[in-house]
Image 1 (cartoon, rainbow, N blue to C red):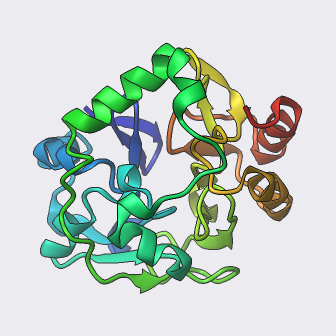
Image 2 (cartoon, rainbow, N blue to C red):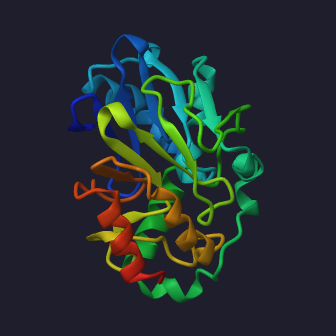
Length: 246
């Protein structure tokens, strides 16, 4: 069941992958990220636990084009919900097998958390995604025209089109997979850090993209993987730089 992060903001999904909902009152609801394809089985139940229905949702905003964040995009589009994505990730979202990373996955197979995540993704339909729908563009530095009016920061590195979304009225920032709060080796809670080189397209660029977060003021940081970080974006960035990329 979904968990309320703060008034008007809900976290849903599983221990492995998060998706979120932001309730902007009379303007409607924006969903941030769309989980894995198999999450559609529990979509209505998750929304009901938030006190919502699909008809309350006006837009889905994807932080990036990886299949574990875009897996239900087609489900939402079929419900006449607009889906937003940075144009640099449209090709990746349409063809997940084209994804490229800094490093081979092989060295990371010694970590139990890697096998657990792979198994989860296979069970949740990662190899059988529905065709990606047409998306509207997220634009760096602009406010996306969706409920909650998030400011878009293009932060490439994890993927070419990775974006960070700050909902200022809710005092939250969604960082997608630029940062995570899970230890990649154990799968347990950890301080904010970059994703691994086996997950990032360009880890050096991801590290550089941390500089783009300097103007974000939100206190609560919500990652695609892991639990909320409530000590502010500046502390999250400091942690990521200290830990580096594994």
